[in-house]
Amino acid sequence: MEVLTTMPEEVIMNRIYCIRGEKVMIDRDLADLYGVETKRLKEAVRRNLNRFPEDFMFEMTKDEFELWRNENKLQHQDKRGLRHPPFCFTEQGVTMLSCVLSSERAIAVNIKIIRIFSKMRSFLITNKEMVLKLEELERKTNKNSKQIRLIFQTLRQLIEEPKTERTPIGFKQNG
Image (cartoon, rainbow, N blue to C red; front, side, top):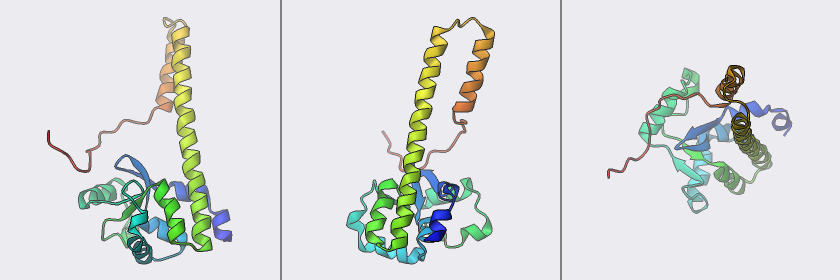
């Protein structure tokens, strides 16, 4: 358990991806953190599929999988074990994994992961509140002042996420 307590949060945060608009962790990364083979983790999940509705876990489509591999520019050694589209677990799915994999290590890992998800959520909420307060302050100040406008433009650039064009993935319904 010592490894888990000394593991930096960044190690887990770097394994959280945005797929289908959800923050998820993939089976391979979770298996690594739990200290089990990916194959065994998937077997445990398949034996307990009724515990994993679609909003807890989903499997990437082949197209999503290829796009994800290209976006994340995985090194050759990172591609090992990634021949098949992985299972993607949302925060609730990761929590449910602690019921399926009831080892001490799985429970400790889940607690750490859930704390990180909570920190990320509170950071996003705080960030949104700050943007709203800045906009309110901008309305109250003299908008003709070039210096104040420059400050707000710079702050917006620092706060806003970079806008990159991405090809949407997933099922597309006609009409």
